[in-house]
Length: 167
Image 1 (cartoon, rainbow, N blue to C red):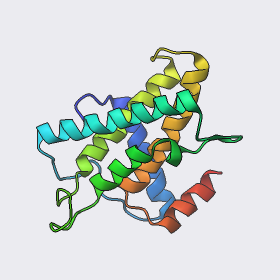
Image 2 (tube, rainbow, N blue to C red):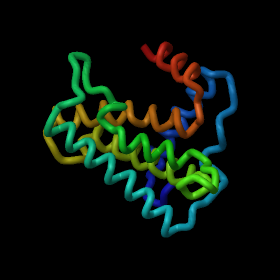
Image 3 (tube, one colour):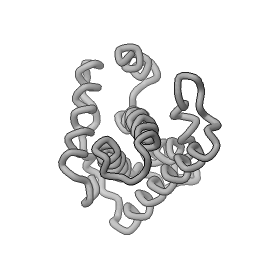
Protein backbone atom coordinates (compact mmCIF):
# COMPACT_ATOMS: atom_id res chain seq x y z
CA UNK A 1 0.00 0.00 0.00
CA UNK A 2 1.04 3.58 -0.40
CA UNK A 3 2.82 5.40 2.38
CA UNK A 4 -0.14 7.72 2.96
CA UNK A 5 -2.71 4.95 3.48
CA UNK A 6 -4.14 4.98 6.99
CA UNK A 7 -4.70 1.84 9.03
CA UNK A 8 -8.49 2.14 8.73
CA UNK A 9 -8.24 2.13 4.94
CA UNK A 10 -5.86 -0.83 5.01
CA UNK A 11 -8.29 -2.69 7.27
CA UNK A 12 -11.19 -1.85 4.93
CA UNK A 13 -9.38 -3.37 1.92
CA UNK A 14 -8.24 -6.42 3.88
CA UNK A 15 -11.76 -6.99 5.24
CA UNK A 16 -13.18 -6.91 1.71
CA UNK A 17 -10.50 -9.30 0.47
CA UNK A 18 -11.22 -11.75 3.31
CA UNK A 19 -14.95 -11.59 2.54
CA UNK A 20 -14.31 -12.29 -1.17
CA UNK A 21 -11.97 -15.19 -0.38
CA UNK A 22 -14.49 -16.64 2.06
CA UNK A 23 -17.43 -16.35 -0.34
CA UNK A 24 -15.47 -17.87 -3.20
CA UNK A 25 -13.75 -20.49 -1.06
CA UNK A 26 -10.36 -19.89 -2.57
CA UNK A 27 -7.08 -18.17 -1.91
CA UNK A 28 -6.63 -14.73 -3.47
CA UNK A 29 -3.38 -13.24 -4.75
CA UNK A 30 -1.14 -11.95 -1.94
CA UNK A 31 -1.91 -8.53 -0.54
CA UNK A 32 0.10 -6.42 -0.75
CA UNK A 33 1.74 -8.00 -3.79
CA UNK A 34 5.41 -8.94 -3.73
CA UNK A 35 6.38 -7.02 -6.88
CA UNK A 36 7.47 -3.42 -6.50
CA UNK A 37 7.23 -0.80 -9.20
CA UNK A 38 10.13 1.67 -9.07
CA UNK A 39 9.16 4.53 -6.71
CA UNK A 40 9.01 7.31 -9.32
CA UNK A 41 6.95 5.20 -11.73
CA UNK A 42 4.72 4.00 -8.87
CA UNK A 43 4.03 7.58 -7.82
CA UNK A 44 3.25 8.62 -11.42
CA UNK A 45 0.87 5.72 -12.07
CA UNK A 46 -0.89 6.20 -8.73
CA UNK A 47 -1.34 9.90 -9.45
CA UNK A 48 -2.78 9.05 -12.88
CA UNK A 49 -5.33 6.70 -11.30
CA UNK A 50 -6.29 9.32 -8.71
CA UNK A 51 -6.68 12.03 -11.35
CA UNK A 52 -8.79 9.78 -13.58
CA UNK A 53 -11.05 9.01 -10.62
CA UNK A 54 -11.44 12.69 -9.76
CA UNK A 55 -11.99 13.76 -13.39
CA UNK A 56 -14.58 11.06 -14.06
CA UNK A 57 -16.34 11.79 -10.77
CA UNK A 58 -16.46 15.51 -11.58
CA UNK A 59 -17.85 14.76 -15.05
CA UNK A 60 -20.60 12.60 -13.53
CA UNK A 61 -21.44 15.28 -10.96
CA UNK A 62 -21.74 17.89 -13.72
CA UNK A 63 -23.62 15.82 -16.28
CA UNK A 64 -25.35 12.96 -14.45
CA UNK A 65 -25.02 11.06 -17.74
CA UNK A 66 -24.56 7.64 -16.19
CA UNK A 67 -27.38 7.89 -13.67
CA UNK A 68 -30.48 5.73 -13.79
CA UNK A 69 -33.45 5.48 -11.45
CA UNK A 70 -31.47 3.06 -9.28
CA UNK A 71 -28.33 5.23 -9.25
CA UNK A 72 -25.23 5.70 -11.33
CA UNK A 73 -23.69 2.78 -13.21
CA UNK A 74 -20.20 2.71 -11.71
CA UNK A 75 -18.50 1.00 -14.65
CA UNK A 76 -19.83 3.77 -16.91
CA UNK A 77 -18.91 6.57 -14.48
CA UNK A 78 -15.28 5.36 -14.22
CA UNK A 79 -14.38 3.76 -17.58
CA UNK A 80 -10.90 5.29 -17.77
CA UNK A 81 -10.09 4.44 -14.18
CA UNK A 82 -11.12 0.82 -14.68
CA UNK A 83 -9.23 0.59 -17.98
CA UNK A 84 -6.09 1.82 -16.23
CA UNK A 85 -6.59 -0.72 -13.44
CA UNK A 86 -7.01 -3.47 -16.04
CA UNK A 87 -3.74 -2.41 -17.66
CA UNK A 88 -1.94 -2.30 -14.31
CA UNK A 89 -2.94 -5.84 -13.25
CA UNK A 90 -2.23 -7.41 -16.64
CA UNK A 91 1.07 -8.76 -17.92
CA UNK A 92 1.79 -7.56 -21.41
CA UNK A 93 3.54 -9.48 -24.13
CA UNK A 94 6.76 -7.61 -24.94
CA UNK A 95 5.62 -7.31 -28.57
CA UNK A 96 2.49 -5.39 -27.41
CA UNK A 97 2.40 -1.83 -26.22
CA UNK A 98 2.84 -1.81 -22.48
CA UNK A 99 5.35 -2.31 -19.74
CA UNK A 100 5.58 -6.10 -19.71
CA UNK A 101 5.10 -6.91 -16.04
CA UNK A 102 2.03 -5.91 -14.05
CA UNK A 103 1.97 -3.10 -11.50
CA UNK A 104 -0.28 -4.73 -8.93
CA UNK A 105 1.41 -2.79 -6.14
CA UNK A 106 0.12 0.43 -7.74
CA UNK A 107 -3.41 -1.01 -7.74
CA UNK A 108 -2.98 -1.96 -4.07
CA UNK A 109 -1.98 1.63 -3.32
CA UNK A 110 -4.93 2.93 -5.32
CA UNK A 111 -7.30 0.63 -3.40
CA UNK A 112 -5.89 2.06 -0.19
CA UNK A 113 -6.36 5.59 -1.45
CA UNK A 114 -9.97 4.86 -2.46
CA UNK A 115 -10.71 3.21 0.90
CA UNK A 116 -9.20 6.19 2.73
CA UNK A 117 -11.32 8.55 0.66
CA UNK A 118 -14.43 6.46 1.37
CA UNK A 119 -13.78 6.57 5.12
CA UNK A 120 -13.29 10.35 4.99
CA UNK A 121 -16.48 10.79 2.95
CA UNK A 122 -18.46 8.75 5.45
CA UNK A 123 -17.02 10.57 8.45
CA UNK A 124 -17.58 14.05 7.00
CA UNK A 125 -13.84 14.60 6.69
CA UNK A 126 -14.21 15.98 3.16
CA UNK A 127 -15.92 19.23 2.28
CA UNK A 128 -19.14 19.44 0.31
CA UNK A 129 -22.80 18.98 0.93
CA UNK A 130 -24.00 15.84 2.66
CA UNK A 131 -25.88 14.84 -0.51
CA UNK A 132 -22.80 15.13 -2.73
CA UNK A 133 -20.62 13.30 -0.18
CA UNK A 134 -23.21 10.50 0.11
CA UNK A 135 -23.36 10.06 -3.68
CA UNK A 136 -19.57 10.06 -3.97
CA UNK A 137 -19.31 7.61 -1.06
CA UNK A 138 -21.75 5.25 -2.81
CA UNK A 139 -19.86 5.49 -6.11
CA UNK A 140 -16.48 5.05 -4.40
CA UNK A 141 -17.72 2.09 -2.37
CA UNK A 142 -18.90 0.33 -5.51
CA UNK A 143 -15.73 1.31 -7.42
CA UNK A 144 -13.59 -0.29 -4.71
CA UNK A 145 -15.42 -3.56 -5.34
CA UNK A 146 -14.82 -3.35 -9.11
CA UNK A 147 -11.13 -2.54 -8.62
CA UNK A 148 -10.84 -5.35 -6.08
CA UNK A 149 -12.39 -7.81 -8.56
CA UNK A 150 -9.70 -6.90 -11.08
CA UNK A 151 -6.94 -6.88 -8.47
CA UNK A 152 -7.94 -10.39 -7.33
CA UNK A 153 -8.23 -11.57 -10.95
CA UNK A 154 -11.77 -12.84 -10.48
CA UNK A 155 -13.50 -14.66 -13.31
CA UNK A 156 -16.82 -13.38 -14.67
CA UNK A 157 -18.57 -16.29 -12.92
CA UNK A 158 -16.96 -15.35 -9.60
CA UNK A 159 -18.00 -11.72 -10.03
CA UNK A 160 -21.58 -12.83 -10.75
CA UNK A 161 -21.58 -14.97 -7.62
CA UNK A 162 -20.32 -12.06 -5.50
CA UNK A 163 -22.90 -9.70 -6.97
CA UNK A 164 -25.70 -12.20 -6.39
CA UNK A 165 -24.73 -12.66 -2.74
CA UNK A 166 -24.44 -8.91 -2.10
CA UNK A 167 -28.03 -8.20 -3.23
